[in-house]
Image 1: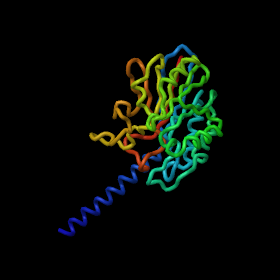
Image 2: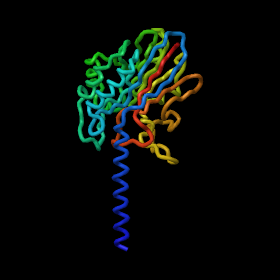
Image 3: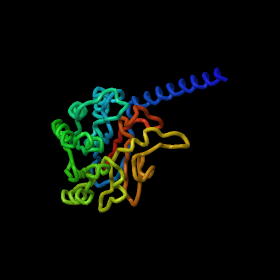
Image 4: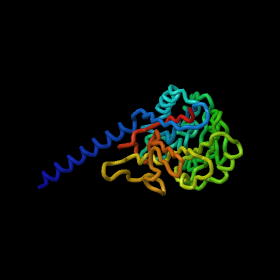
Length: 270
């Protein structure tokens, strides 16, 4: 009986190590580039959405993020939008990086119309002022419930809803004032439910598409008040489109199952 229990324990240990190894390799995979085209009365304008880089060891040191930035540059986007959570303070981390080190790789981005960012919940928890200084030092436009023109587009940057810093009415009002084809950038996808006016596109992250999404059981959590409704990918409601990226880094544990890292390339117009 004791021998049988020992074999069972050994088998369970091997299965656990194998599962963790596979999950870690999944987390280290190069991001999948997903594409979406949306009609609009403008010349084709391409956006790359990057979200949840969560720079920390072991899975996302700055060097890996730099390689992903090179992958984005090879896509030659007109505009890059960063949807927050640039740092990670997960207990399983093997190394932490300050705001400057976590943001530095983004300085190599070369989109024609620039790079625009909002903060996520981890950024606020680390220190919003520090994160904004680091972003702005690299030339990245950082928005918090306001908007800016980028060529034919108007980008509204909603501050983080998870930490109660979002002001959707103020952001929508700013979009109306500056004109252009409106696009809302938010870390958390939940404000999509309250989206109104002429804003037809919202881009977000935060959910990691569940990060660990198992057959039958699906994701353990999406970190959203609406569960899987706004959990991942392209969501269409009331004539509007929400794109939720799976993100680049990880939260809590450096593993992924069924949710590979991704980048979204969205072309508006044409």
